[in-house]
Amino acid sequence: MMLSNSKENQTIYEINENSFIEIPSNWSKRVNEIGLSNRFILISKYPELWVYMGKHGDHLILSSKGSPLYCSCKGFRMQIEKRTYKGCSHIYALKIAIKSNRFRDLSGKISISDLNKIIEEIMEMDYSSYLREILVKHEIS
Image (cartoon, rainbow, N blue to C red; front, side):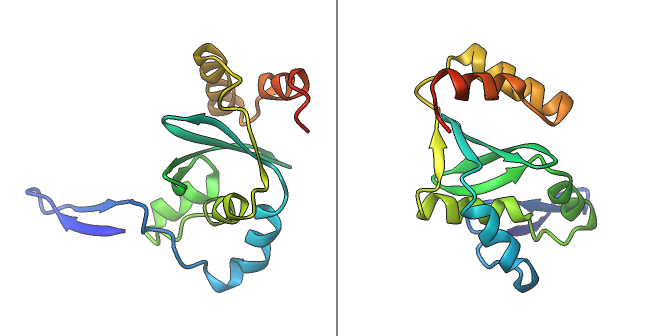
């Protein structure tokens, strides 16, 4: 994470691929569980967009070359508001899922309108029933 000052003397934080490298030690067990859970779905390669299908809702994760940059979960937003910038467990777990090939790839199987509907549902309801329909349609479990 990069720190800089703007002309208005405000602090600006830039999140990039090096922002979330070291897992906070107290998150390690949870991150490994999530990373190996097979709950990550790649829904777009360009831009690189993932969904984590969690027990308490779905989360969108924006990534660049396999390095997560943003998660729509409440925990990520709270870290930003607190200015601690640790990220969230989903950010670190996605790296594990990618390295261990524990994710599902829908990126070549859905249209732009499908992608938009999935994003809209998650942003409005924290859950995408449409994504689940697509998973069943393509028999990806």
